Image (cartoon, rainbow, N blue to C red; front, side, top):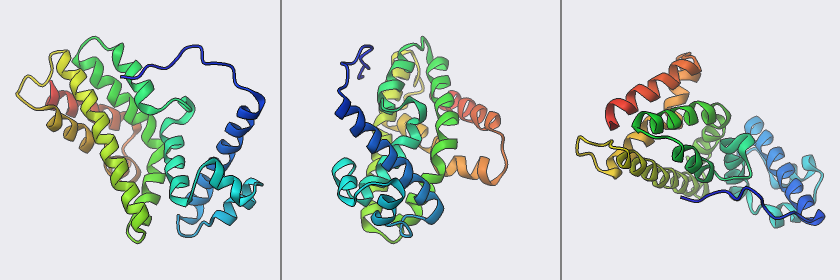
Amino acid sequence: MVEIQDNPAPRGRRQVQSIQTRELIVATAGKLFLANGYLGTSIETIATQAGVAIQTIYNSVGNKPSLLSAVLDAAVAGPLAPATVPEFMAKRVALATDVPGVISVLADWFSEGMPRSHAIFNVISQAAAIDPDIAQLRESRALQRLANYRLAAASIRERGGLANGMSDDDAAAVIFTLGHPDSYASLVANFGWSLHQYRDWIYISMLSALS
C-alpha cells in the first residue's frame, strides 16, 4: 500500500496557482454537471463560469470525460484531497488491528464518501446510457474500485478473516456490492434510511460475510 509523505516538498507559486486553477475548474464543472447533467454542460460553459480559457481546461484537466472523472475524484475524496482514496484508506486500514476494525474503517468510509459522491455517480450512470466514452469511464472506475477492495480483502485475511474459505476476489465482490452507489441511493436517498442506519447495515453485513 502507498503511504503519504508527511512532509511534501514546498510548492512554488506557479505550481500553487496551477493547482488552484485546476480545483476551480473541477469545482465549477461539478456544479454544472449536477445542475444540467453531463450532456447539458459544455466545455465552453465551464470555461465561462470558471473565468478561464477553454484551452486552460484542456491543459489543466483534459477533455470532458476527464473532467467528469476529476469531479468524481474530488467528490469521493472530499476534504482529504489531494491525497487519493487508496492512499488515505491504506493509512486507515493499517491502524486497524483486527477484522472488525478493518470492516469498521470500510463502513465509516462508505457512510462518509457516499453522501458527497452519489449524485455524481448518478450523473455518470445517466450519461453512460448514451455516451460510449462515459460508459467506458463508468466501467473503468468500477474495475478500479473492485481492485481496491481486493486490497481490503487481503487486509481482512491477514487479520484472520475470510475463515469460511472465501477468496479475496469473492470478498472484494461482497464489499463492491454492499458499498455500491446504487445501494446507498436506494436505501438512503430513496427509502429514507438515516446515515447511521446505512453505516450499521454496511458494518453488520460485511462482518457477517467476511469474518
